[in-house]
Length: 110
Length: 182
Image 1 (cartoon, each protein chain N blue to C red):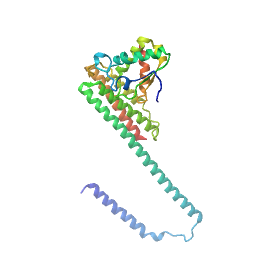
Image 2 (cartoon, rainbow over the protein chains, first blue to last red; image 1 turned 135 degrees about the vertical axis):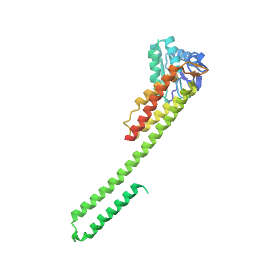
Image 3 (cartoon, one colour; image 1 turned 90 degrees about the vertical axis):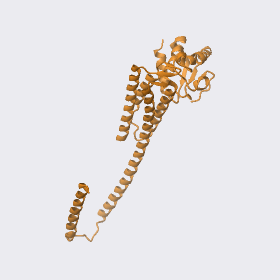
Image 4 (tube, rainbow over the protein chains, first blue to last red; image 1 turned 135 degrees about the horizontal axis):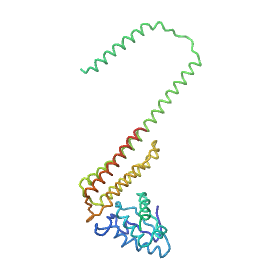
């Protein structure tokens, strides 16, 4: 599915094609780094415009559970579960099961 | 010479005796010079059905066997990737990015297998259990903390990873058995 929206984060091109682990201490391209450098500002912009942020997971070499968990849990901590759930849409055509998994991270966060 | 070969010779000789006796008494059979048209039609129709069924069943069986081979090949590919993951677990140290790549490849194979199953005669085979165990393995080996993206497994995590690997491999073998039974 191709999404034409100004509020889109494509991990492979906007961050890294090889995402890493959880936090800075784990190494480069961590979930924390992705959140700080990419996801938080993109989400804030989408929120300001009252629009949906599309997060495209396709095109990377693959994800560690810790990377996605860290990024989305931080998003929930900063913006709240309800706001996050109503303003994001995950795109994952290569591994659709990540969508359900990320929703569970969001629901279990806080 | 093997004893089984002697048995074959004895059977052949016995069969020869029986056939010899049968043909000696061939004069006991009587041939009707008239042909009953209904019996002839019945014979032709029965023969036609026989040939039709043989050809169609043969074709269906051959199609099913080629589908099975394709599906099993796909499962074997997944088992190979699982073995690569196990090698890394055995070393108790691996690059989390490489491991994420292996797991993505495994997941994509599973989606491909799902699509293939749906378009084959094995469409009632469920992959829910395999998917569940794949997620369990992914959670165990890519949720650990790392240093320079290198994960070092302690004994507890090593045992959990090995258990998750064995469960997944077991499910793949069960899947092969299930496909073969179809």
